[in-house]
Length: 187
Ligand code: CUA
Image (cartoon, rainbow, N blue to C red; front, top):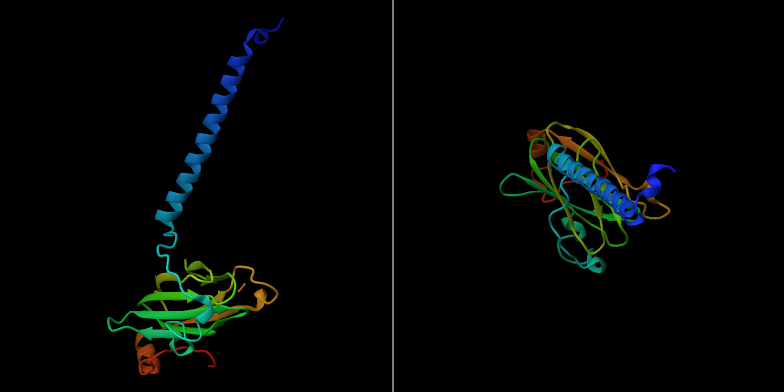
C-alpha cells in the first residue's frame, strides 16, 4: 500500500487550504507591490478630488460655459485649462499652454464617459458626466502633443481627439497674454 493512503482526509484538506492561502497572500502582496511601485516610481496617483456638476446645464451657465473654455492665466502665473469632452470632440480642439508652468486641467462631459490623455505625459483620466476631472501637471519643454479620447464613447470615438501645443513662456505671454481665455483652435 502506498503511504499517502494513510493521510486522514481532513488533514489533506487542511494542507491544501493552507497551500492556497499562501498563494492568495502572495497574489495580494504582489498587487500591493505593483500599486506602491507605480504610485511612487511612476507618479501615477489616482485622482484625489470628487467634484460634481450638473451635466445638463454645462453650456448655459457656470464654469464650463463656452466663453470660459480654454486656457486662463491666474494671478500667480499658473494656468488653468477648462475643457469639455463631448460626442465627438473636445472643446477647444487645440489647447495652448506655456512650458515650465504649473497647469491644472479641469474637464467634464455633457453626455457619456470619455477619456482624457495627453501623449508623452502621465496625464490620463476618465471624464464622467456629472463629475469634474482635475489633473495637475507641468510641461518641461515646448512641443506638440496629441490628446485622443481613450474611452469608447460610441460610433465617432475614433475621430475624437485634440491637440496640445506647449510653447515657450515668453511666447505665450506675447501671443496670448491679453486674451481672457486662450486656445489655438482654428489656427
Ligand atoms: Cu469620446 Cu471616445
